[in-house]
Image 1 (cartoon, rainbow, N blue to C red):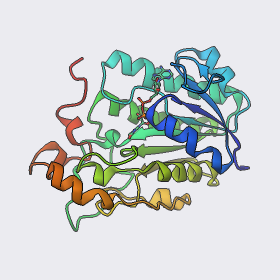
Image 2 (image 1 turned 180 degrees about the horizontal axis):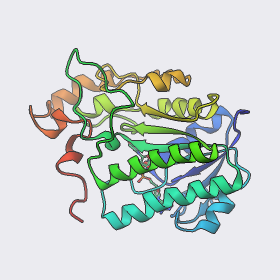
Image 3 (image 1 turned 135 degrees about the vertical axis):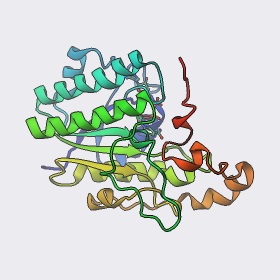
Image 4 (image 1 turned 90 degrees about the vertical axis):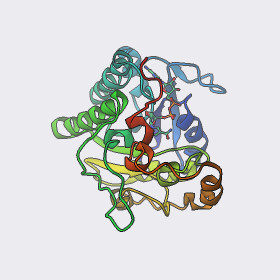
Length: 269
Ligand SMILES: NC(=O)c1ccc[n+]([C@@H]2O[C@H](COP(=O)([O-])OP(=O)(O)OC[C@H]3O[C@@H](n4cnc5c(N)ncnc54)[C@H](O)[C@@H]3O)[C@@H](O)[C@H]2O)c1
Protein backbone atom coordinates (compact mmCIF):
# COMPACT_ATOMS: atom_id res chain seq x y z
CA UNK A 1 0.00 0.00 0.00
CA UNK A 2 1.33 3.51 -0.74
CA UNK A 3 2.53 5.38 2.35
CA UNK A 4 -0.47 7.09 3.96
CA UNK A 5 -0.50 10.85 4.00
CA UNK A 6 -3.82 11.94 5.49
CA UNK A 7 -4.70 10.53 8.88
CA UNK A 8 -7.76 10.70 11.06
CA UNK A 9 -6.54 11.05 14.66
CA UNK A 10 -9.34 10.20 17.10
CA UNK A 11 -8.99 11.19 20.73
CA UNK A 12 -7.03 14.25 19.58
CA UNK A 13 -7.79 16.21 22.76
CA UNK A 14 -6.39 13.49 25.04
CA UNK A 15 -2.94 13.02 26.50
CA UNK A 16 -1.45 10.92 23.71
CA UNK A 17 -3.45 12.75 21.04
CA UNK A 18 -2.08 16.09 22.16
CA UNK A 19 1.49 14.76 22.03
CA UNK A 20 0.96 13.16 18.61
CA UNK A 21 -0.60 16.30 17.13
CA UNK A 22 2.83 17.87 17.54
CA UNK A 23 5.03 14.88 16.77
CA UNK A 24 3.36 13.24 13.74
CA UNK A 25 3.22 16.12 11.21
CA UNK A 26 7.05 16.23 10.87
CA UNK A 27 6.80 12.71 9.39
CA UNK A 28 4.75 14.21 6.57
CA UNK A 29 1.21 13.47 7.73
CA UNK A 30 -1.76 15.75 7.42
CA UNK A 31 -4.01 15.24 10.41
CA UNK A 32 -7.77 15.38 10.61
CA UNK A 33 -8.69 15.57 14.29
CA UNK A 34 -11.70 14.15 16.11
CA UNK A 35 -12.75 14.12 19.74
CA UNK A 36 -15.97 14.27 21.74
CA UNK A 37 -14.69 17.49 23.31
CA UNK A 38 -13.25 20.50 21.46
CA UNK A 39 -9.55 20.16 20.73
CA UNK A 40 -7.69 23.14 22.22
CA UNK A 41 -6.06 25.26 19.54
CA UNK A 42 -7.71 23.31 16.70
CA UNK A 43 -10.95 24.99 15.67
CA UNK A 44 -11.27 22.72 12.61
CA UNK A 45 -11.28 19.54 14.68
CA UNK A 46 -14.40 17.43 14.36
CA UNK A 47 -16.32 17.35 17.64
CA UNK A 48 -18.23 14.07 17.58
CA UNK A 49 -19.00 11.10 19.77
CA UNK A 50 -17.98 7.62 18.65
CA UNK A 51 -21.69 6.81 18.95
CA UNK A 52 -22.47 9.13 16.02
CA UNK A 53 -22.18 6.83 13.02
CA UNK A 54 -23.00 9.50 10.43
CA UNK A 55 -20.31 11.80 11.81
CA UNK A 56 -17.77 8.96 11.82
CA UNK A 57 -18.57 8.07 8.23
CA UNK A 58 -17.92 11.65 7.19
CA UNK A 59 -14.80 11.87 9.36
CA UNK A 60 -13.10 8.86 7.79
CA UNK A 61 -14.05 9.74 4.21
CA UNK A 62 -10.95 10.20 2.08
CA UNK A 63 -8.32 9.53 4.75
CA UNK A 64 -5.49 7.08 4.04
CA UNK A 65 -5.42 5.65 7.57
CA UNK A 66 -6.87 6.09 11.04
CA UNK A 67 -5.03 6.33 14.36
CA UNK A 68 -7.73 5.41 16.86
CA UNK A 69 -6.95 6.76 20.32
CA UNK A 70 -10.42 7.90 21.40
CA UNK A 71 -12.19 6.18 24.26
CA UNK A 72 -12.19 5.78 27.99
CA UNK A 73 -8.58 5.28 29.03
CA UNK A 74 -9.04 4.00 32.59
CA UNK A 75 -11.45 1.70 34.36
CA UNK A 76 -15.08 2.85 34.42
CA UNK A 77 -18.54 1.31 34.58
CA UNK A 78 -19.27 -1.46 32.13
CA UNK A 79 -21.98 0.67 30.49
CA UNK A 80 -19.59 3.53 29.80
CA UNK A 81 -16.84 1.21 28.57
CA UNK A 82 -19.39 -0.58 26.42
CA UNK A 83 -20.54 2.65 24.76
CA UNK A 84 -17.20 4.36 24.14
CA UNK A 85 -14.70 1.53 23.74
CA UNK A 86 -16.70 -1.44 22.48
CA UNK A 87 -19.60 0.01 20.46
CA UNK A 88 -17.51 3.09 19.61
CA UNK A 89 -14.65 1.04 18.15
CA UNK A 90 -17.14 -1.09 16.20
CA UNK A 91 -18.77 2.08 14.81
CA UNK A 92 -15.38 3.37 13.69
CA UNK A 93 -14.46 0.10 11.97
CA UNK A 94 -17.81 0.02 10.20
CA UNK A 95 -17.27 3.58 8.97
CA UNK A 96 -13.75 2.63 7.81
CA UNK A 97 -15.05 -0.45 5.99
CA UNK A 98 -17.85 1.47 4.31
CA UNK A 99 -15.49 4.23 3.18
CA UNK A 100 -12.72 1.87 2.03
CA UNK A 101 -10.04 2.99 4.51
CA UNK A 102 -7.17 0.51 4.24
CA UNK A 103 -5.51 0.66 7.66
CA UNK A 104 -6.27 1.41 11.29
CA UNK A 105 -3.72 1.80 14.06
CA UNK A 106 -5.59 0.83 17.20
CA UNK A 107 -4.63 1.96 20.68
CA UNK A 108 -4.77 -1.26 22.67
CA UNK A 109 -3.23 -1.52 26.11
CA UNK A 110 -1.04 -3.51 28.46
CA UNK A 111 -4.28 -3.99 30.42
CA UNK A 112 -5.50 -6.46 27.75
CA UNK A 113 -2.93 -8.81 29.28
CA UNK A 114 -2.75 -7.17 32.71
CA UNK A 115 -3.05 -10.34 34.78
CA UNK A 116 -0.01 -11.83 33.02
CA UNK A 117 2.89 -12.35 35.45
CA UNK A 118 5.76 -10.04 34.70
CA UNK A 119 9.02 -11.84 33.94
CA UNK A 120 11.70 -12.10 36.63
CA UNK A 121 15.37 -11.67 35.84
CA UNK A 122 16.49 -14.36 33.39
CA UNK A 123 12.93 -15.28 32.36
CA UNK A 124 11.79 -14.70 28.76
CA UNK A 125 10.04 -11.47 27.90
CA UNK A 126 6.24 -11.66 27.45
CA UNK A 127 5.40 -12.34 23.78
CA UNK A 128 2.46 -10.74 21.94
CA UNK A 129 0.73 -14.11 21.58
CA UNK A 130 0.38 -14.55 25.32
CA UNK A 131 -3.33 -15.19 26.05
CA UNK A 132 -5.60 -12.26 26.80
CA UNK A 133 -5.82 -11.73 30.57
CA UNK A 134 -7.62 -8.40 31.04
CA UNK A 135 -7.39 -6.80 34.45
CA UNK A 136 -10.46 -4.51 34.16
CA UNK A 137 -13.52 -3.89 31.96
CA UNK A 138 -11.21 -1.35 30.34
CA UNK A 139 -8.68 -4.09 29.53
CA UNK A 140 -11.51 -6.31 28.35
CA UNK A 141 -12.58 -3.63 25.87
CA UNK A 142 -9.04 -3.62 24.46
CA UNK A 143 -9.24 -7.43 24.01
CA UNK A 144 -12.47 -6.81 22.10
CA UNK A 145 -10.76 -4.19 19.94
CA UNK A 146 -7.95 -6.60 19.04
CA UNK A 147 -10.42 -9.35 18.14
CA UNK A 148 -12.56 -6.91 16.16
CA UNK A 149 -9.43 -5.89 14.23
CA UNK A 150 -8.68 -9.55 13.47
CA UNK A 151 -12.26 -10.07 12.24
CA UNK A 152 -12.13 -7.02 9.97
CA UNK A 153 -8.87 -8.26 8.48
CA UNK A 154 -10.10 -11.82 7.93
CA UNK A 155 -13.53 -10.80 6.65
CA UNK A 156 -12.92 -7.48 4.92
CA UNK A 157 -9.17 -7.13 4.33
CA UNK A 158 -9.00 -4.01 6.52
CA UNK A 159 -5.50 -3.91 8.03
CA UNK A 160 -4.79 -3.04 11.67
CA UNK A 161 -1.78 -2.71 13.89
CA UNK A 162 -2.96 -3.06 17.49
CA UNK A 163 -0.50 -1.25 19.74
CA UNK A 164 -0.53 -2.41 23.36
CA UNK A 165 0.68 0.89 24.73
CA UNK A 166 2.54 0.73 28.02
CA UNK A 167 2.69 4.22 29.56
CA UNK A 168 3.00 7.10 27.12
CA UNK A 169 3.82 10.21 29.12
CA UNK A 170 6.62 12.76 28.87
CA UNK A 171 8.45 10.99 31.72
CA UNK A 172 7.91 7.80 33.75
CA UNK A 173 6.39 8.65 37.13
CA UNK A 174 6.53 5.30 38.95
CA UNK A 175 8.91 2.37 39.24
CA UNK A 176 6.47 0.17 37.29
CA UNK A 177 6.55 2.70 34.46
CA UNK A 178 10.29 2.13 34.11
CA UNK A 179 9.28 -1.14 32.42
CA UNK A 180 6.26 0.20 30.50
CA UNK A 181 7.34 3.67 29.41
CA UNK A 182 6.85 4.73 25.80
CA UNK A 183 8.46 8.11 25.32
CA UNK A 184 6.41 10.51 23.18
CA UNK A 185 9.17 10.56 20.52
CA UNK A 186 9.24 6.74 20.42
CA UNK A 187 5.44 6.72 20.25
CA UNK A 188 5.61 8.86 17.10
CA UNK A 189 8.34 6.56 15.69
CA UNK A 190 6.20 3.53 16.46
CA UNK A 191 3.06 5.02 14.90
CA UNK A 192 5.05 5.98 11.79
CA UNK A 193 6.32 2.39 11.53
CA UNK A 194 2.81 0.95 11.96
CA UNK A 195 1.50 3.30 9.27
CA UNK A 196 4.19 2.67 6.67
CA UNK A 197 5.08 -1.04 7.04
CA UNK A 198 3.86 -3.20 4.16
CA UNK A 199 1.29 -5.96 4.51
CA UNK A 200 0.60 -5.83 8.22
CA UNK A 201 -2.67 -7.85 8.07
CA UNK A 202 -3.55 -7.70 11.78
CA UNK A 203 -0.37 -7.34 13.76
CA UNK A 204 -0.20 -6.88 17.53
CA UNK A 205 2.78 -5.01 18.94
CA UNK A 206 3.81 -3.83 22.37
CA UNK A 207 4.41 -0.13 22.62
CA UNK A 208 7.33 0.85 24.80
CA UNK A 209 10.73 2.42 24.50
CA UNK A 210 13.96 0.39 24.59
CA UNK A 211 13.74 0.19 28.37
CA UNK A 212 16.50 -1.65 30.22
CA UNK A 213 13.80 -3.02 32.57
CA UNK A 214 11.37 -4.03 29.78
CA UNK A 215 8.95 -6.86 30.52
CA UNK A 216 7.71 -7.54 27.02
CA UNK A 217 9.01 -8.50 23.65
CA UNK A 218 9.25 -5.70 21.09
CA UNK A 219 10.15 -8.00 18.19
CA UNK A 220 6.84 -7.63 16.31
CA UNK A 221 7.17 -3.85 16.56
CA UNK A 222 10.79 -3.97 15.42
CA UNK A 223 9.76 -6.18 12.48
CA UNK A 224 7.55 -3.30 11.30
CA UNK A 225 10.59 -1.01 11.33
CA UNK A 226 10.26 0.47 14.83
CA UNK A 227 13.65 1.44 16.24
CA UNK A 228 13.12 2.95 19.70
CA UNK A 229 15.73 5.45 20.80
CA UNK A 230 14.80 6.13 24.42
CA UNK A 231 15.33 4.15 27.63
CA UNK A 232 13.59 4.91 30.93
CA UNK A 233 16.74 3.90 32.79
CA UNK A 234 17.88 7.53 32.86
CA UNK A 235 15.01 8.16 35.34
CA UNK A 236 15.53 4.98 37.36
CA UNK A 237 17.88 6.10 40.11
CA UNK A 238 15.74 9.08 41.13
CA UNK A 239 12.42 7.21 40.86
CA UNK A 240 13.63 4.25 42.91
CA UNK A 241 15.10 6.64 45.52
CA UNK A 242 11.87 8.68 45.69
CA UNK A 243 9.30 5.87 45.53
CA UNK A 244 11.09 2.62 46.38
CA UNK A 245 10.41 -0.74 44.73
CA UNK A 246 6.82 -2.04 44.91
CA UNK A 247 6.44 -4.40 47.91
CA UNK A 248 7.23 -8.02 47.05
CA UNK A 249 4.04 -9.89 46.20
CA UNK A 250 2.03 -6.70 45.50
CA UNK A 251 0.17 -6.37 42.22
CA UNK A 252 2.70 -3.80 41.02
CA UNK A 253 5.41 -6.39 41.68
CA UNK A 254 3.60 -9.39 40.19
CA UNK A 255 1.59 -8.38 37.15
CA UNK A 256 2.01 -6.48 33.90
CA UNK A 257 -1.16 -4.54 34.75
CA UNK A 258 0.16 -3.58 38.19
CA UNK A 259 -2.31 -1.95 40.57
CA UNK A 260 -5.09 -2.11 37.94
CA UNK A 261 -5.35 -5.80 38.93
CA UNK A 262 -6.45 -5.01 42.49
CA UNK A 263 -7.29 -1.36 42.75
CA UNK A 264 -8.19 0.00 39.35
CA UNK A 265 -8.72 3.75 39.13
CA UNK A 266 -12.38 4.77 39.51
CA UNK A 267 -13.57 1.40 40.86
CA UNK A 268 -16.28 0.88 41.95
CA UNK A 269 -17.96 3.65 40.06
N1 LIG B 1 -1.53 7.05 27.86
C1 LIG B 1 -1.12 5.82 27.98
O1 LIG B 1 -0.05 5.55 28.51
C2 LIG B 1 -1.95 4.67 27.44
C3 LIG B 1 -1.61 3.37 27.82
C4 LIG B 1 -2.33 2.30 27.27
C5 LIG B 1 -3.34 2.56 26.35
N2 LIG B 1 -3.66 3.85 26.04
C6 LIG B 1 -4.76 4.08 25.10
O2 LIG B 1 -4.37 5.10 24.19
C7 LIG B 1 -5.50 5.95 23.91
C8 LIG B 1 -5.16 7.40 24.28
O3 LIG B 1 -4.82 7.44 25.64
P1 LIG B 1 -4.77 8.83 26.42
O4 LIG B 1 -3.89 8.63 27.59
O5 LIG B 1 -4.49 9.92 25.46
O6 LIG B 1 -6.27 8.91 26.93
P2 LIG B 1 -7.11 10.24 27.27
O7 LIG B 1 -8.19 9.81 28.19
O8 LIG B 1 -6.20 11.33 27.68
O9 LIG B 1 -7.75 10.62 25.86
C9 LIG B 1 -8.82 9.93 25.29
C10 LIG B 1 -9.61 10.92 24.44
O10 LIG B 1 -10.74 10.21 23.89
C11 LIG B 1 -11.85 11.09 23.93
N3 LIG B 1 -13.07 10.28 23.98
C12 LIG B 1 -13.53 9.54 25.02
N4 LIG B 1 -14.72 9.00 24.72
C13 LIG B 1 -15.01 9.40 23.45
C14 LIG B 1 -16.12 9.18 22.59
N5 LIG B 1 -17.17 8.44 22.99
N6 LIG B 1 -16.11 9.75 21.38
C15 LIG B 1 -15.06 10.52 20.97
N7 LIG B 1 -13.98 10.77 21.75
C16 LIG B 1 -13.97 10.23 22.98
C17 LIG B 1 -11.67 11.91 25.22
O11 LIG B 1 -12.40 13.12 25.15
C18 LIG B 1 -10.16 12.10 25.25
O12 LIG B 1 -9.77 13.33 24.68
C19 LIG B 1 -6.66 5.38 24.69
O13 LIG B 1 -7.41 4.52 23.85
C20 LIG B 1 -6.01 4.59 25.79
O14 LIG B 1 -6.83 3.54 26.25
C21 LIG B 1 -2.98 4.91 26.56
